[in-house]
Length: 200
Image (cartoon, rainbow, N blue to C red; front, side, top):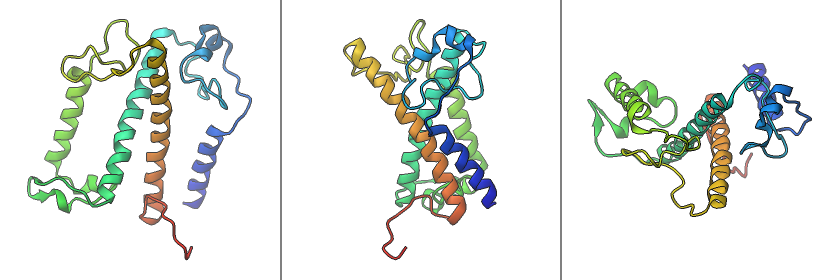
């Protein structure tokens, strides 16, 4: 177990260490090294070479998936903080009151099957009908969606919009690593957060 954790931590640390990354020549020819999100110290980072033969449509598909994962993980991180602080909604899922559902990943095993199905159906609804990418817009911009418009509504200029998009990418990436760390810490000692302990 310790070896597996050490291996995963070493791999995640390597992802953030500054190193001379070489993207494939075909990827560089496509111009992905100048895309939004390519920042120091990593620069263009494609360790699995997924963009080696990708066209612009494929790149935008990957970017949309990255944004989606980042947004979900930001909500998940807030959910972790909320439930671990003891806050629960009133009501119940069938015979199980929300107050009885534990925080963290054990909640998955406490939620009734009907509740899990409701969550999956709602996510599927959002995926198919709730969020629609406008034709010609950049990945993650759902302002043209009639049901749930999501985008960069406060950005009045193109420069401000670019800045907001870069910030969201960074925050989403941080949230993905943050949620992963919470899950690992919870498995190690049952406590996903690191609190200051003067006796430590």
